Length: 104
Image (cartoon, rainbow, N blue to C red; front, side, top):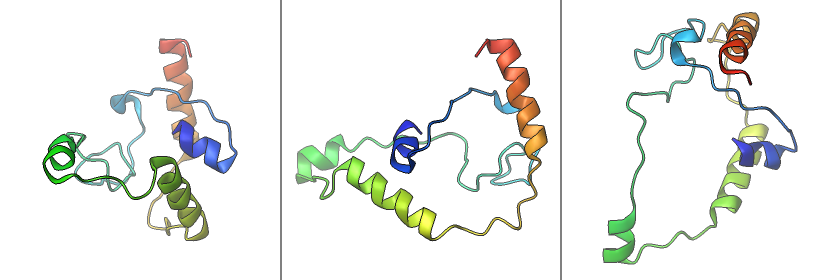
């Protein structure tokens, strides 16, 4: 998230909000509190050690360059979210409550 903010030249504050405190959104992957279609349980973290050591895999593009290219492409090709009714006021309220509980 910090790298994306840097790429976009946009400072933001990252505030942890527990899933159960989030306002309900249109269901995605059977999760009632996520408007992200890729928000799945459990979160996955892939380990590429075996493919690197046994097959000699190496990234062709540094991660910073790949992220910058991806962010710029997404800015230029914004996905349509008209199907996604979001109440930003509800999200703001969840953030306000999280700040009260966690002191951020």
